[in-house]
Each structure stands twice: as C-alpha cells, then as structure tokens.
Length: 133
Image 1 (cartoon, rainbow, N blue to C red):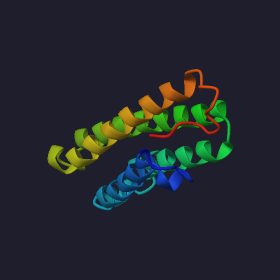
Image 2 (cartoon, one colour):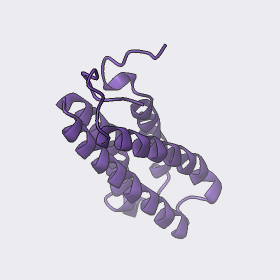
Image 3 (cartoon, rainbow, N blue to C red):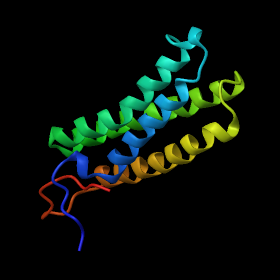
Image 4 (cartoon, helix red, strand yellow):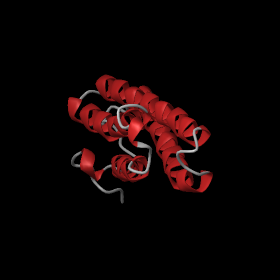
C-alpha cells in the first residue's frame, strides 16, 4: 500500500532536494571569497529553488499550478548542472568533490521529470489530489 502524502515534506523528491541544498552549501563554503556574490551565491539560489518550488507547487492545490512549479524547479536543476560544470572548469572543486552532488541532482531531475509527466497526464476521475513521487 502506498504511503499517504499529507504535505510536501512527505515527498521523497523534496527530501532529496533539501539534501542537495546542504551539499551545495558545504561545497560552496570552499570557494574563493571573491565568488561569495558570484558563482557561490548563484549555485545556492539554484539549489534552494528546487525544494522551494516543489513545496509551493504542492501547496497550490491544482495540477496545473503544481506542474508549473515543477517546471520551474526543473529549470533550476538545469541551472545548477551548468553552474557545477563552471565550478569544475574554474577548479573550485574536483570531479570527486562534485560527484555526489551530480549524482543526487541527476536523481532529482529524473524524479521531477516523472512527476511532471504524471501531472500533465489526464487525472483519473477518482483522484482528488495531485500525484506525488
């Protein structure tokens, strides 16, 4: 039997996104100080946008709104993918340091893609709430 999702904090994709935020903060603390308001800040905002938009979309109450905010989260994930590559290219982190972030972000992006597909499909007549992963 599937666990009942009462709020966004029950969502696996939200939990993993929060874990990602922590990893990004840990990584960016090691960046040069002159990146504090540059790449470091941008990566943190992109990471924070993922769980924030998942939560906001879930609370909106309609499939259409939920799908819209999942699309925004998905875009933030793509931004973060790019920013991680930039950090690697600038030698702010090694491939190994960024690997756990890359793996977790890829997993989150796949989950968001599935969730977005489910939200855009026609809901069965007996479904009162949006589907959740």
